[in-house]
Length: 149
Image 1 (spheres, one colour):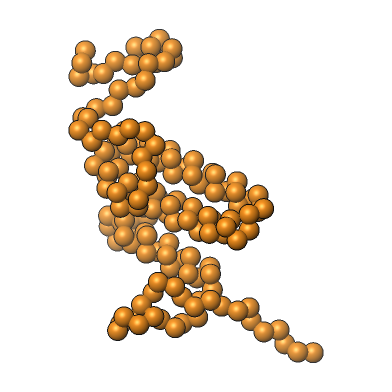
Image 2 (cartoon, rainbow, N blue to C red; image 1 turned 60 degrees about the horizontal axis):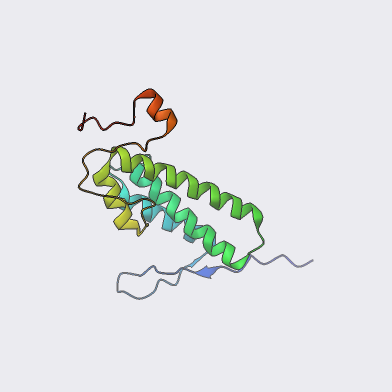
Protein backbone atom coordinates (compact mmCIF):
# COMPACT_ATOMS: atom_id res chain seq x y z
CA UNK A 1 0.00 0.00 0.00
CA UNK A 2 1.31 3.42 -0.97
CA UNK A 3 1.88 6.02 1.71
CA UNK A 4 -0.29 9.09 1.41
CA UNK A 5 1.46 12.19 0.27
CA UNK A 6 1.22 15.33 2.35
CA UNK A 7 -1.40 17.87 1.28
CA UNK A 8 -0.18 20.53 -1.15
CA UNK A 9 1.13 23.67 0.49
CA UNK A 10 0.84 27.14 -0.88
CA UNK A 11 3.78 29.47 -1.27
CA UNK A 12 3.93 32.25 1.27
CA UNK A 13 2.41 35.48 0.04
CA UNK A 14 3.54 38.96 0.80
CA UNK A 15 6.68 37.86 2.65
CA UNK A 16 10.03 38.97 1.29
CA UNK A 17 13.55 37.81 1.96
CA UNK A 18 16.64 39.80 2.86
CA UNK A 19 17.22 40.90 -0.74
CA UNK A 20 13.61 41.80 -1.49
CA UNK A 21 12.92 38.62 -3.43
CA UNK A 22 9.91 36.51 -2.62
CA UNK A 23 10.48 33.88 0.03
CA UNK A 24 10.00 30.48 -1.54
CA UNK A 25 9.33 28.55 1.62
CA UNK A 26 6.25 26.44 1.46
CA UNK A 27 3.64 27.23 4.09
CA UNK A 28 0.10 26.06 4.68
CA UNK A 29 -2.78 28.50 4.76
CA UNK A 30 -3.03 28.09 8.53
CA UNK A 31 0.64 28.99 8.94
CA UNK A 32 0.20 32.05 6.73
CA UNK A 33 -2.84 33.14 8.75
CA UNK A 34 -0.86 32.72 11.96
CA UNK A 35 2.04 34.80 10.60
CA UNK A 36 -0.34 37.58 9.55
CA UNK A 37 -1.97 37.51 12.97
CA UNK A 38 1.40 37.73 14.73
CA UNK A 39 2.38 40.67 12.52
CA UNK A 40 -0.85 42.48 13.41
CA UNK A 41 -0.26 41.87 17.12
CA UNK A 42 3.36 43.08 16.87
CA UNK A 43 2.24 46.24 15.07
CA UNK A 44 -0.26 47.28 17.78
CA UNK A 45 1.44 46.06 20.97
CA UNK A 46 2.27 48.69 23.56
CA UNK A 47 4.78 46.47 25.38
CA UNK A 48 6.53 43.23 24.44
CA UNK A 49 3.96 40.98 26.16
CA UNK A 50 0.84 43.06 25.41
CA UNK A 51 -1.89 40.90 23.88
CA UNK A 52 -4.97 42.27 25.63
CA UNK A 53 -5.03 46.01 25.01
CA UNK A 54 -7.90 47.40 22.99
CA UNK A 55 -5.73 48.15 19.98
CA UNK A 56 -4.38 44.60 19.84
CA UNK A 57 -7.84 43.08 20.27
CA UNK A 58 -9.31 45.20 17.47
CA UNK A 59 -6.34 44.28 15.23
CA UNK A 60 -6.83 40.57 15.96
CA UNK A 61 -10.57 40.82 15.29
CA UNK A 62 -9.89 42.65 12.02
CA UNK A 63 -7.33 40.09 10.88
CA UNK A 64 -9.67 37.17 11.65
CA UNK A 65 -12.53 38.93 9.84
CA UNK A 66 -10.33 39.33 6.76
CA UNK A 67 -9.37 35.66 6.88
CA UNK A 68 -12.97 34.54 7.23
CA UNK A 69 -14.03 36.86 4.38
CA UNK A 70 -11.49 35.20 2.10
CA UNK A 71 -12.77 31.79 3.20
CA UNK A 72 -16.38 32.80 2.52
CA UNK A 73 -15.44 34.01 -0.95
CA UNK A 74 -14.31 30.45 -1.73
CA UNK A 75 -17.08 28.71 0.26
CA UNK A 76 -20.21 30.88 0.15
CA UNK A 77 -22.52 28.25 1.69
CA UNK A 78 -20.45 27.76 4.83
CA UNK A 79 -23.01 28.94 7.35
CA UNK A 80 -20.85 28.20 10.40
CA UNK A 81 -18.18 30.58 9.13
CA UNK A 82 -20.79 33.24 8.37
CA UNK A 83 -22.05 33.01 11.93
CA UNK A 84 -18.53 33.16 13.37
CA UNK A 85 -17.71 36.19 11.24
CA UNK A 86 -20.88 37.94 12.45
CA UNK A 87 -19.85 37.26 16.05
CA UNK A 88 -16.36 38.66 15.42
CA UNK A 89 -17.76 41.79 13.76
CA UNK A 90 -20.01 42.35 16.79
CA UNK A 91 -17.12 41.87 19.22
CA UNK A 92 -14.97 44.32 17.27
CA UNK A 93 -17.82 46.80 17.18
CA UNK A 94 -18.24 46.62 20.97
CA UNK A 95 -14.51 47.10 21.52
CA UNK A 96 -14.45 50.08 19.15
CA UNK A 97 -17.44 51.59 20.94
CA UNK A 98 -15.59 51.29 24.25
CA UNK A 99 -12.49 52.87 22.77
CA UNK A 100 -14.52 55.66 21.18
CA UNK A 101 -16.02 56.55 24.57
CA UNK A 102 -13.00 56.02 26.83
CA UNK A 103 -9.82 56.30 24.72
CA UNK A 104 -10.47 58.75 21.92
CA UNK A 105 -6.86 59.20 20.77
CA UNK A 106 -6.26 55.44 20.57
CA UNK A 107 -9.60 55.01 18.80
CA UNK A 108 -8.53 57.51 16.14
CA UNK A 109 -5.18 55.75 15.68
CA UNK A 110 -6.76 52.29 15.36
CA UNK A 111 -9.43 53.44 12.91
CA UNK A 112 -6.84 55.14 10.71
CA UNK A 113 -4.24 52.37 11.00
CA UNK A 114 -6.57 49.46 10.22
CA UNK A 115 -8.68 51.28 7.63
CA UNK A 116 -11.94 50.70 9.50
CA UNK A 117 -14.87 53.02 8.90
CA UNK A 118 -16.35 54.65 11.98
CA UNK A 119 -19.88 53.40 12.62
CA UNK A 120 -21.10 56.72 13.99
CA UNK A 121 -20.20 60.28 13.26
CA UNK A 122 -17.02 60.83 15.22
CA UNK A 123 -15.96 64.32 16.21
CA UNK A 124 -12.34 64.20 17.45
CA UNK A 125 -12.63 67.70 18.94
CA UNK A 126 -15.37 66.60 21.32
CA UNK A 127 -13.94 66.32 24.82
CA UNK A 128 -16.81 64.37 26.33
CA UNK A 129 -19.55 62.11 25.13
CA UNK A 130 -23.22 62.74 25.74
CA UNK A 131 -25.65 59.86 25.76
CA UNK A 132 -28.65 59.86 23.47
CA UNK A 133 -31.84 60.83 25.21
CA UNK A 134 -33.86 57.71 25.86
CA UNK A 135 -36.53 57.07 28.42
CA UNK A 136 -34.16 54.95 30.53
CA UNK A 137 -31.37 57.53 30.49
CA UNK A 138 -33.81 60.39 31.02
CA UNK A 139 -35.45 58.61 33.98
CA UNK A 140 -32.07 58.21 35.65
CA UNK A 141 -31.04 61.77 34.80
CA UNK A 142 -27.95 60.53 32.94
CA UNK A 143 -28.62 62.08 29.55
CA UNK A 144 -27.14 65.46 30.50
CA UNK A 145 -23.63 66.47 29.62
CA UNK A 146 -21.58 67.11 32.79
CA UNK A 147 -19.87 70.15 31.24
CA UNK A 148 -23.14 71.81 30.21
CA UNK A 149 -25.02 71.49 33.53
